[in-house]
Image (cartoon, rainbow, N blue to C red; front, side, top):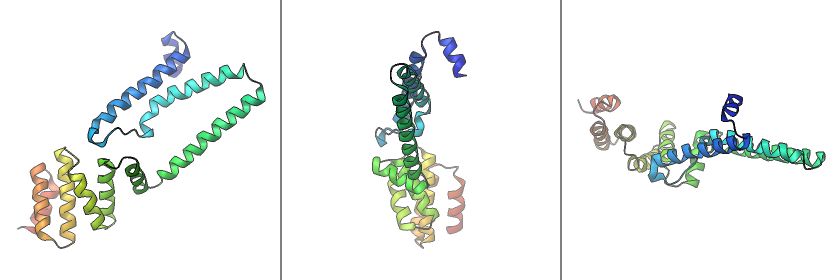
Length: 196
């Protein structure tokens, strides 16, 4: 496919690679604005399109450099680049080994990140760590605007309060979930189990 695009481009491969690189950043810039309250956040996996252009630019540069520098120096440069990319990949993979660890890393970089806060709350809830889950979910409830998401968070808080024996708060959050999204069935079911 890349071959067909370069042939249709009718310009240099370097200009195509640069365009591909910049076009990927344009898409990421739009994605960053999706949750403006989180600030300017870029996740590395968002840059797949840019990476194609980036690696093509590196390949073009290395190909041109091969004609200028001695072969041993060129091979040493290739070895260094491959080693650096390998080390960076291993480091990033270690960060993303668990979802919880990755969300904690994400919060270190972007403390107000609503998605990471919500996910940490959900993970703590699933692990039965209710105080931690409650703390994260209460913060997340105020960060999201979509009614469906707020309904899910309110429902999860209701379940936590139900599990910990706080019936009044459970009812309050189940009703809040229904107010956010009247068709949210889990909240209706949970409420009917508490209030006949």
